[in-house]
Length: 170
Image (cartoon, rainbow, N blue to C red):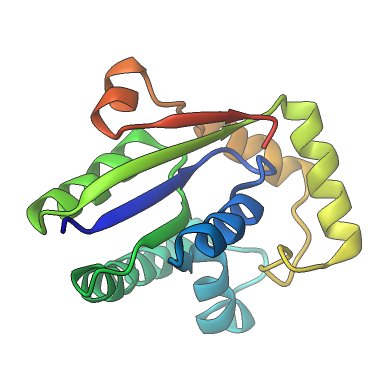
């Protein structure tokens, strides 16, 4: 049996965490959320305003540890769902290489919705502070727009390589 690792990709407000939670219920998987790890381990000590170097260093630490636990879990035959954003191609490639070296199959789930719909969702999440409000601070429009510039939707070759599905509307 080949272990399966699911990558959940999309820009801010696409519905990644909501989808990842549902997928885990359906497949009996374990979800690894970068927002939860960062909130639990680092946000209480974060500089204000946030410093990009500080943030990136801690993201890298979380990614490394998330992969270590993912690999252990997947080797035991438990599907793993990586809710890490995967907004950039290089991040998807790096994790896919790790999965390949461990002989795990990758399945990419891409969530897509129009930017204004995603912004409305973010505003709602900021106001509700419910299950998917992870970071202990509101996502501002400036943050949303900054991340929007970083979003690199997967191309056709990447979609084929990772047995990808696109979910429009999140």
